[in-house]
Length: 189
Image 1: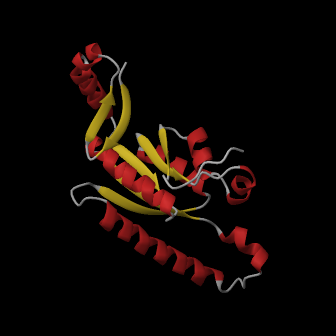
Image 2: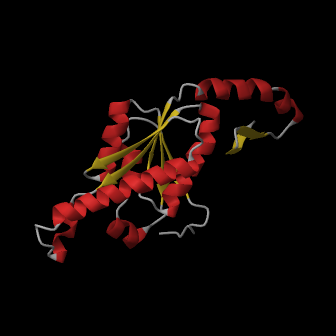
């Protein structure tokens, strides 16, 4: 039986166990390419972490097979979570505007440096709760796939810092590929 092991630089590597399986390799590869040609829109949410940058690079490599349109997006959260810091209400709009301008610059930098110029890629800033906005965006755009980085957090860290990728996987209207950075060490809960 063939097994997909690695997808990089537009090459699909299939590992097979028997010589008889190698005869069917070409047919299997064509079937996979036919299936993948159904993927035309890929959403890649980012929080600008190394994990999400790695997910983008993974999506770009994967997209060499799909030739899909990429949607790179970032969600700015509401300031309600900062209420414990007693920030002045007059400073919040200016601070939020600065966050948005910074996010636009960082999205543009990611797109220009990591996405090949021939690949259609739009950048989007959304406002609200990250998992909800990602799901709504994917639904509205009729996305075929979401590629999202995961920080590999478990236990108390996951509770404290959130679990956007987990919520996206559970509630997404389309398939989700979660990508863990190779340097993230997995720890058992």
